[in-house]
Image (cartoon, rainbow, N blue to C red; front, side):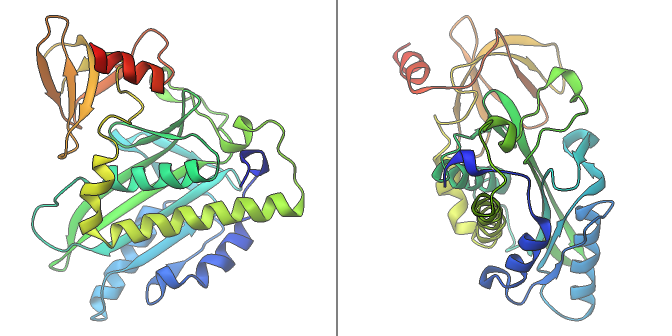
Length: 292
């Protein structure tokens, strides 16, 4: 699919396609045109499944959200037709995950977009970036429902960039704005729905296959958006410092190199911001960093 074919998302067509998807056969599904939070609704549906003695597998895809949220409780702008807003719940296989599922899901979504001609990349720890701006994000939670442990993933991907400004100077982008020559022809509308279906199905497939998580995370080791970037690290505890982002480990932690040549490991509770107008890793910047 050409990236120029991406237009506003046809939610009724998307709902019809997903309701027939083999990937979600046997799941509880809901496709509300509007909802306060897909995470809230999918949690309720999973709890109802557990109460009925069924496996907690649930999918919610909404036309719009009025109270979507991201990491650290930030608001996520989810307008009608402006993006793909969905949440999934699957049973937790138990034990410690062998790789962080949020990064595995993000890697799969970036691969689907890349296959569609859209050069999206994963920005550590849980965002999708395109052309130097935030295209989407994931929020992953692990908890128990009446003793049954589950994973819940909330995912938002912009088809159009939200008008409201993002906090801390972040810039939002959308698939349609990135492709200024897009057309609203029927074929383009169908291609846009096709892409959305692949993204939702891809997320569901990865969540249900924990054995695939290490491979997806490994694919990001030196192929994430921050690789080689000059960054400012704001630790959860302690003062901020400057460094250069390096590899991502199997455990999903980010290694940064300090000016004195030593390294530190950064966790998801720490904040990492690119400096000096960083627009994302390229093959050239990656090769240059690896030679250092």
